[in-house]
Every structure is written in C-alpha cells, then in structure tokens.
Length: 326
Image 1: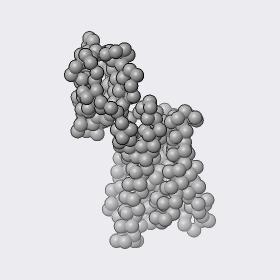
Image 2: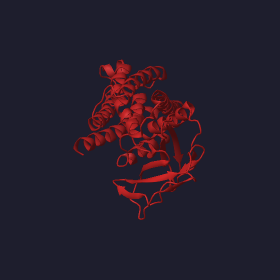
Image 3: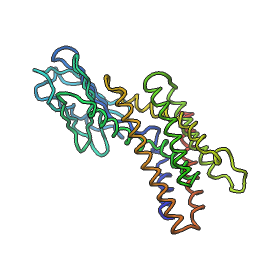
Image 4: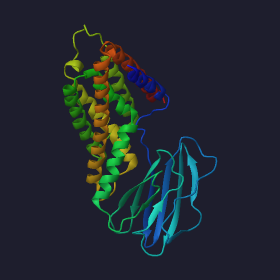
C-alpha cells in the first residue's frame, strides 16, 4: 500500500510539469552544401534560460568555423547556426556538444554530399561521437531504438494511459491481450503518419489523448455492482481504438526528431520497437506492484486502485483543459 500511495503522490507532483510527448531531444544537423563547406544548425531544449550563452558544438579537428556561429534563445531552447570549412573529409572525426547535463541528449544528423546520411546520439555521459567512415543500418537501429524507449518512458500521457489500462483490467492475461491491441493500433498510425500517408494536427491529438486517460480513469471508478461496460467486458477494443489516436502522438514526436534519409524504414521500425520495449517494462512493473499488494495487503487493494484512478483522472482532466484552452 505504501508503494501505491507513493506512486499516487508522485503522479500528483507530475501534474504541473508533465506535458505530452516529453521527449524533445536536442538536434544537431551538419549538411555539406558544397565540397568541404558545411552548414551547421542546432537546438538544445533547456528548462530555464541560461544566464550566459553556451559554447557552440565542437566540430571535427580538420575543420574551422567561418566566423562566429550565431547563438540565441528561442522559447525553452538554445538555438544556433553557423558555417564551417574542412580540409578533407570528416569521416573518422568526432563531433561533440559541450554543456549537456543530466538527462539531456542530442540527436546528430550528418548529410555529406552524395553520400548516405548518418544518425548519432550525444548524451551528458557521452557528449562526443565519432563520425563513421562507412555508416551502417545498425547505427541507425541502435540510435532510434534508444530514442523510442526514452520517448515512452518520458511521455507521461502515453504512460498514464497504459498504467490506467492495467489498473482497469487487473488480470495479466487480459492485460497482455489489451496491450497487444494497443501496440498493433498505434504502430499502424505511427507508421502511416511518419511516412506521410495520413496526418492530424498535433494539438487536437494531444487533447484527445488526455481525454482517453480521463475516460479510463472514470471506467476504473465505476461501481462494481453496475452492469459491466464495453470497456470492462472487451478492453482490447477500447485499447485498439485509442491506440490509433496515440499513434499520431508518437508520430508527432518522431517527426520532431526526424528520420534519416536512406534508412527511414529501419529507423521507424527501431523507434517503434523501442516504444514497445519501454511499454512492456511499465506493464510488467505495474503488474508486479499489483501482485505484491494482493499478496501482502489484499484488503488495501481496492482502495489503492481507486486512489490511483483518482490521481490519474485528475491529471488527465488537467491536461485536457490545458490543451484545449492553451
């Protein structure tokens, strides 16, 4: 019970801070305009505006900036651009971003002239990365898999929907069926939207995702002596339908990250597999917590579920209002 009480308190603390698709990694783009001449652009999200502008990215050793890069602050991000010239190629060289702290990360896209593009990832722990001599699909798979895992673990609206689904169903077998339906449906719209076949405005999608969280919370709170609703009888249908909507949310985040030309399908598959891996971790953790409460404090199970549902519902309602009026 203490664990679930702490979980509810944590959810409430997240209300003012959490937003849709929290994963908004920084990006760094290096594009070769003509032989040896590169355009550089970057964006680094920050929680608060810095008092001093940070240093620009560190470019390969055989390159130098053509004048000082332009650096400024736009919204909650540091943005910059510049141009640099290199003597020879940059394959085998390194690129780095100083000033990454905490959980900050940065996706690097490198596009040489008439050569395949590359996707690298910088973190606070590893703020430097080597530019591959021969880029591989494995590199793209690894980068976008990690981004997918981070997205679902940082995207609290998607997480709360999955958590609410587990709390509503309870039985692990039915949870697996519903989670599979959710996975299949959001994979469909994620792929279709990311590849440009369909699309929806992001703000209405985010509002409807908040509504889906509120809807599940209300379903959890329905009295047990009422006639079971469709949601409780066939939760996989509701999971599938709402999953289509959540897929547009995943696609919005993926579009913000970008897909590497030449490896679009590999990146899309890796991102989706990463999302599913993170989702399975959350489902397993919640099921384990529910089992522990049933096993050691069975009389507190129902109150704990209701308390969690109230917390999730309040957050969903807050997001819904915030996304409609903002």
